[in-house]
Image 1 (cartoon, helix red, strand yellow):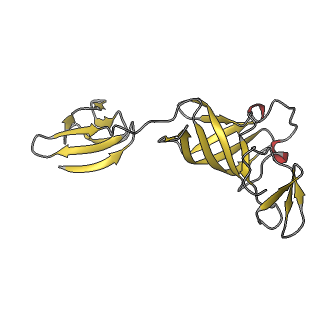
Image 2: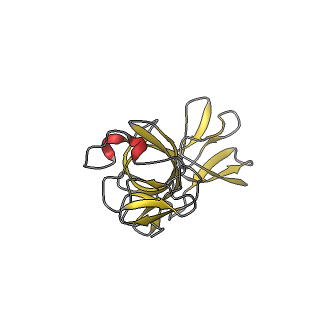
Image 3: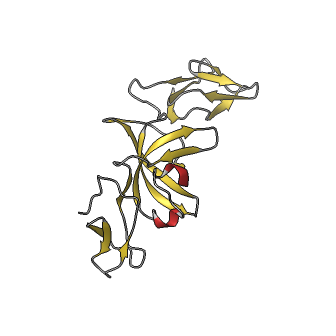
Length: 185
């Protein structure tokens, strides 16, 4: 029996090769996984099944994530998700990027998201909604926001001093939507 780790919706085989087993489904052409787990291909009985690990939990609305800002526009930013957790439990995520809308950043008025986030910043956020083609996140709580910022000019880590970020390398002073958990104080 061959085994490999699969995600929900992942194509496993054609219906001519293998029949559906536990935690799988077909569309009369292909067999797909309906769960996160290990796909087991039984070549003797021509059946594929997916065995779910007991401790794997997918992320849901409210799950906290750590990510890196990959792009910032006036009204939204793209974040590449690197880690997901709920309390101390790690969560598994199938989508590796999320969108942060300007309306979900803070309860204060923000004119331009470029003032709050820069490409390369490390951000702690919370999942707001999960849709078929998009995950949205929010940073509208004090503990959410930038946890590590990098200078726009020289890319050095920025020190927090009196609610402003200062680059110790080139002296640049910048603003961000900071988390109370900012790492370089």
